[in-house]
Image 1 (spheres, rainbow, N blue to C red):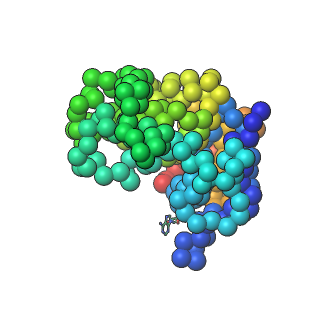
Image 2 (image 1 turned 90 degrees about the horizontal axis):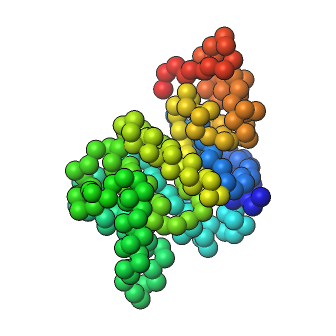
Length: 250
Ligand code: ADP
């Protein structure tokens, strides 16, 4: 199995405050990996460090290379709340943005690029909305359009930051099924996620984070009351039956 990302002693500090500390991990291709941990645990920061969007100490490699050389091979879907939905742009143009990484500066997008973008819109069931403004769509539809943009990028590695927050059940199901299809094609998908009740059905592996990496590996081995308690502290209420866990509070 090929390694997708490898982190060695990665730390990020914002104005002297530690967001993540000494994270080392190796992830193999062909998995859906959930990144879980309480609010402020550094989940988004970890993703941004891998993408080279924040300054970090330590080393990060993606497919054995520095991220600067390979950024176009990572599709990133940021948190919905970080996107300006009033920005006047059509659905089809949002998806076409996924193709720009493959278009050299000296030429325009080609018919092939447009076709790929349309295909991606079909994959998320949003083709009939292609001429709508992105701001007119529901939360779930907007998220599906951003997933289509990521699909149109034709990459092997996907990073999704809280993709299921504020979306309808139907959109969630469409997205989860798509992620499973991508995995069956050998793609690797990292998903920041806070709903612990879905962890066992959605993910193959998880990273449990609270500034430091508390545990990582297969869901069965790692998604344990002891690890969750270490990450969530007093907020993790572990029910008597080991298989069910709930998190109380934020
Ligand atoms: P999570 O995604 O797990 O909620 P984040 O990575 O967003 O956590 O944040 C980790 C910590 O870093 C938090 O304490 C947060 O307030 C802080 N932080 C995140 N982004 C910034 C930033 N741009 N500037 C300063 N502090 C930040």
